[in-house]
Length: 461
Image (cartoon, rainbow, N blue to C red):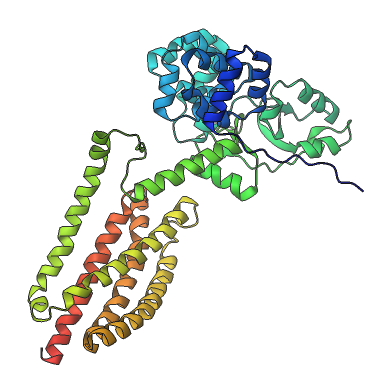
């Protein structure tokens, strides 16, 4: 039997190609064709085109995006500079139209980028009902499920029949915005959930309460975004209901918002590990980049002097055994790299909730064993290379022992530093690498030069 033709995802043209195509259609007045393109194109693909268009052309495209309900999502894909370049010339009524045609969570995120006075004017234009809904989202605590949730969701009374529920879904205006049917009682308490598949397969006269799943995975309105992401990942959900402290359903967080959280958290952790501000971009002015990076580099400089002071303690040893200076960076560098590996594993474990202060010491012991094994393996290689290269097997033996010591130190520091920062209420990703590097540099220099000093005494050098 011939297989039905399957549609394959098309590769979107570049932003410049889109810009040329849209401009050409606008010049010829082909608005019907332009509307079809906007309807069929994802907001993320249209977003990079907007800054490339002339203001009049951009406003026409924005009006089509508003009709399609895609305007806020397309604008939110832009970076701050491009977003404000587009929003600033728009009048308040246009921005109100963008918010009115968009999902409440997207509209709230867009309003959150505006100044307070302008935001308040737009909320007044939107009217009491919609304005109050968006204002409640804006007033929710940042970095909580309440700031992520969409208040536009479908909830049905558990006493309804399946047939009545399907009819309610048909009447629901935003069918693309939900994946499950949440069941509530007469007071709005969340009591169950149904997948659309289960709803379709159930008998039409059956009540929802007899077919729904009562053990609903849910999160509190003040849950941290990372906790929401863990729930969605653990239970393979497309959306998760948000309830208040009385178990009343107040919103829904969809998987696209969770993916944004995961991406933002990954970017933040990557930048924090390097001591870079999360707001910095390649287009950030040089003065702002200088100002945000300087404090962490100054801290790094202070820790570098600490490591140098350890070297200074053994200045006499280095003067008598000058070859030591050649191989000092090997021990410190290997310790720094090993510490960064452990640090990365622990920061990820903390972000995913796999470990905490009380459960983190067993993994640290594992890292001690890993450090000992890697130190011994790399120490043997170093012993052979240095011994054959210089003929000084005593130096090779000192490097062998120092490598073991420092990689064990790196395992302990790489695990203990992020745990301690998290315990003290700090983001474990922030500048952890600076402190771990300090431990490995100080430990590496002290173990290497200290062992060399002992070796000189026994060898009579």
